[in-house]
Length: 268
Image 1 (cartoon, rainbow, N blue to C red):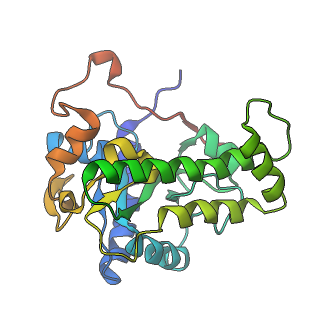
Image 2: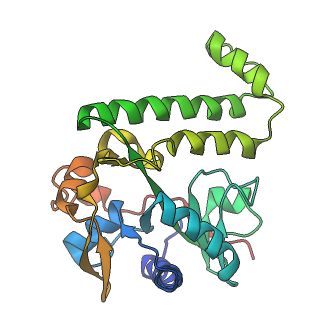
């Protein structure tokens, strides 16, 4: 197995984060450290030593503004990928790549013309509900509905006997639609409550069971040191992390202290 220079990977990710940070400050947009990156901030004041990715999230309004702005304001070697601008990009959340890096995910090297080390940028959506239990139920229903479109797209040109009759019927009706149209329909489902006054939020792209929570868990946010810079994190970051990871301050077993992504040397 190829040895990956994790320090180099993390340095490249910090370089991408700096570009994102400059755009967000210029346009008054707000992003939060999340996931393993947030664990790193809380536990290590920086990256988890073996972590090979960096994740941030934005509330949907800021996210949509960022995607449009970054598409035009980022310059080579920094490149934003979003499904609305590239049919070959397979996600419904954005990534910012640094295309001149030594490494890339094996998957993205094969799927995209230009790729490299990246940062994931996730949207946070609002949920209108009477209580947290109902918010989670509503988010899960919407996630399940949206994935019907993903299944339809995946199976549009083949017979899959495992699909339900309803899904097969929808597949026939929607088959003529391009992939971008199907993904836009998924996103519209996620955004149904975003113009309403809501008490709850969720992150559909990371799973709703642990990601649906009161909006106060994120707002107004606070700062934690991360690799020598103070970065915004969710206000109740302990609760956010505990929901997803349990005792996140405890180090995993030695054999689990390894990169999670299939990084390879880029074809030059």
